[in-house]
Picture 1 (cartoon, rainbow, N blue to C red):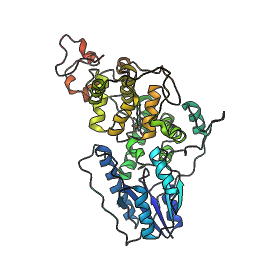
Picture 2: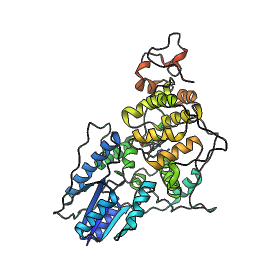
Picture 3: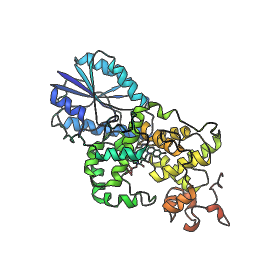
Picture 4: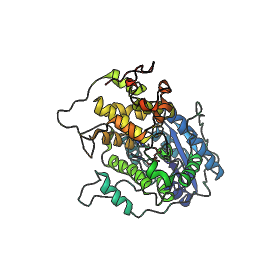
Length: 415
Ligand code: FAD
């Protein structure tokens, strides 16, 4: 028999439950990726194309291939089912509204359709709060239960992927330009091993240091599933501060699973209104607010497609709490530019900062200046991303407007 493995956020061969099940049980396995033209151009699309090229090479090394199609994922999958006489479609279960919609449509087709774990460490919905309810709303009790959970075993990569040789493999466009970060499972595994050996021991103390930049930068790989989060948790065993971050990722996925409208709806205190200020929003997007720590973060996002977590907290809090602008406008901009941009983590974190989500706390807020002095004391992070301030002495880096002659070409603070 023939099984199609429909790939999406699981672009790897190691620890891939759906792929392993297909390779163990079927005579022929067709790994399929459908490129939807809706994936926005830019860093994330380029990264995705590199992930796919790497995956194709891995399948070819195992006697198979990655079959690529273009268009609507359900239509293309069913065309391939009919063209090959496949009996089943296997996929990794995912949580966003878009993914759920795809899953529901496939479930209604006349084909055996099976979902497997693999997108998170612990599958969403597995852990239930003891006090009742279908998901955890608050992180700490979730973390306690997550830490005690017994995991499924990590799976080895299949030795052979028996893809029928007569299938048209399909065109895979090359990435348009040089990517800021190399995509794919090979690069992901290299980086993970190196980082764990060298930097995991210093993570607990160093992860908030903006200029030191000691976090793993594995988020784009986790976003596309080039790394199994479960395997990563095994590799990082004992590094509690790091495991806690992987747990935050699971936490937001289980909230999204229970509450798929997370990226649209919020629970604001009654009477609260967001401010409409397109100029301020635009200055924030461009990194031209006049507050150096905010501008450094926003410019890191535009140039690298990534931003340090501490900077994300500061710029998000500034947009929502200082400018009073709707978090969804911020989340949209992040989603457009982040290599790791995904609905669950992006909306979950924005809701957390805004205090409007599950764990509603309208008074959560950061003072951006105090944060800057604490996490970038020598102003090195700002100096790296805001060239107009290169010559400003460290003592004034976070408040250049206090200089007797403020640097030219850099705006005065909006507020
Ligand atoms: P590390 O510190 O090395 O952490 C390891 C992994 O844990 C990360 O790769 C990530 O997968 C996970 N992780 C770490 N922190 C968080 C967190 N707070 N929430 C969920 N998972 C976490 N992360 C995304 O992956 N996609 C997003 O779209 C996203 N949007 C965010 C928006 C805002 C406003 C904020 C405050 C945070 C957002 N984050 C998002 C979370 C976090 O900033 C990034 O995951 C982290 O900075 C990635 O860098 P790293 O891989 O070096 O992280």
